[in-house]
Image (cartoon, rainbow, N blue to C red; front, side):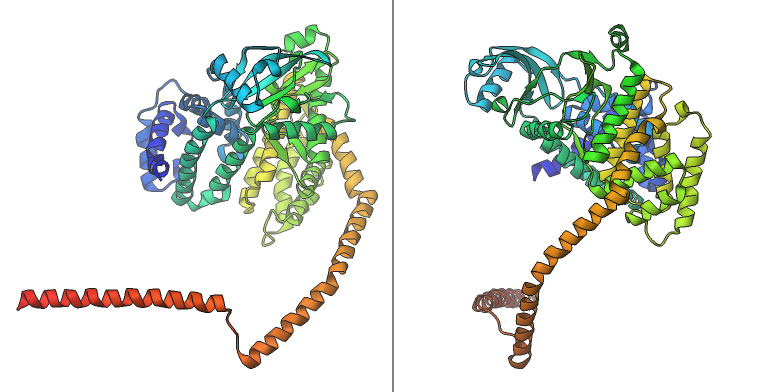
Length: 522
């Protein structure tokens, strides 16, 4: 209750910080009611003169603390809400926080794993990285298997309580945004906070991150050029995650990659194709594949770390994405339009031909450019604008997937500025479409549907019997009237008794009031 009461004051403090850093300059006041426009204009009087919108927003969120940093990182996954320019600025949001003490880290390991530190680790270094949710230490394990280095990730103490408090303020702000302008409901701000809450809940239980590593390891067992660290389940708990230590070169260190003799163009191809395999083939992908979470090991494999944010795509979403990409690659704009309608993403009240025309307006200018000038970010920006015109509601399950694709494109283009996105994506997309939408795929669909129909038939006798019993009871009720259960009759009696008591009390109060008035008038 108190937390809800304090929400407006927390938001006022945050609003002041955002105003000072120039973030209010990002707000389109034309979309706001008069009172809100006035508030934004007054707030902008406080802004510093040496700040820029998206970068100022990132600075303000960083100063507001861990929960707001996480909010900024989450908003970077929602370019449909903040725009691709601001999303790119938020990608650079630094998630570096002061580390907590070594004694606190040791105490948390011992509490979480249920024993003294030496029982699990021979050595534990000082923190090597500290972020908003956790910090990482390098540790040594000596056991019957030998000596090996591991990374130990420890949850920041008290962070779950801090997030719960700030999430309450985020919900308050989201509801206010919806009330200010009904058009913003299309962007589903309350659902966006729901998604943030789920994301944070997953990030703060390291057993779930270990499970994500395990699941992806099974998916990529036969994939070339890509691997992930293995979790140590015996040394993992809700607040402590132990996994393989990776020695490699960070993907952001281009000079070291060149000096080690790696082919940067080939690395760009590996990044794009690996992500597409995970997203389209498996429906389970690393949703935070920025260059800080990617490195190259000594064998030349791409290695991803930090699996706190994962994305899932069902068969419907994977088919949608694959056909959209394939449609743009082959310039089949009619098919791109049909896919939107078949998926139910565009209301049937609109014309497929009109939508195909709008899609062509996006695709044709792209095909007039050189391969290295085609930007997936620009394509998706235009696609969002077009879908808005055709009343397509925000699809959270697609946004995370599309945003990650944009980030991956940016990382790959930094390695190879001349990267041909279409040519790189085509083999993976085409293989999936041929396997799932070609003759073999249709045969598989037919088999699945036949199996489901067979299961439904086995339920039919039971359904018929229940329908017969229901019919008999309805006939009896029509002849004799509907009977009430004894418990229901008693509940009704108690409710009537309460109502009678209150009615009697009300009559006595009225009578007393009339006597009092008459006495004073006499």
